[in-house]
Length: 404
Image (tube, rainbow, N blue to C red; front, side, top):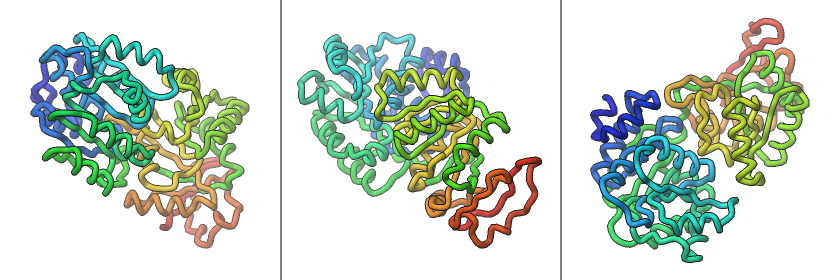
């Protein structure tokens, strides 16, 4: 199937072609006609499959068919500032030929400037739930003309505790509207939210809960916790890794690791919730243009970061569950490209690895590096002699099967 078969206008097709795309992804081929038909949609798909374009392209077409009043006609709710920025960028990319006013409102930025922009009028409002509630309470936003609401990464918003703000926002909207819900999972809370606010939705399910993308090579290195940073530096240098997105558990840990990598000669910067929005945007921009090699992030960046052809993701600290693992590694292997996800697992984190393997329903190749053999009790466990012993040259790894 080609984009021209989906019912999109010539202007939008031209914008899509200008980006080098000729065939829609599975989520796009199913979601675009459903959105154009006016139906509510409840969709799940693996990260990196073109989900944002799956709703922005048909919404742009619908917006172009009628002139607006200056009040938002489309409302997109996202869990993070970064994802809000990604949606705005997508609208600018594909709707450049249209006279549409789009803005994003989220915390961490001066609210006065946002109020001024809203007063001038917008067609598409992209917002995080907390900041939108702030505007509603101040009376600085009018949602009376909203025709379509998009709940982007709804499961993440619920995980972050936004259920009450989302319910309050949706309940404040009047009249019949189209509601589009996109989620990585269809768990119980998501189903309850859909039952309450969606009307006979078309259901599109392209991924099973907790599944990881197929085009990502996954591996785990067993290593003592205090040697993780040295192993990471060694892998990045010896294997000549390009850009690397590294996940840590804490904000302080992200800053510390970034500083250590800098001392090791690897250009690095950190991004997390304590950084100002300006600092986060600056760090991400530097990473995208390859001014820095390593971007060290907490889970605030696990969703919403859109980095073209990112080759490597590293779990410096293991996440607690499979869903967080899938969202982290999903920053690589996007839009059909190949990617590699590497986890550095200390003895204390073995249980997290086992939990993740059960969640993604797959074994993750487990490796020890000759120069960084684990010595802790939790790592040098019975059965490690199952390694095949074949290194990959000096300092190379030897592999052993992971056991749940």
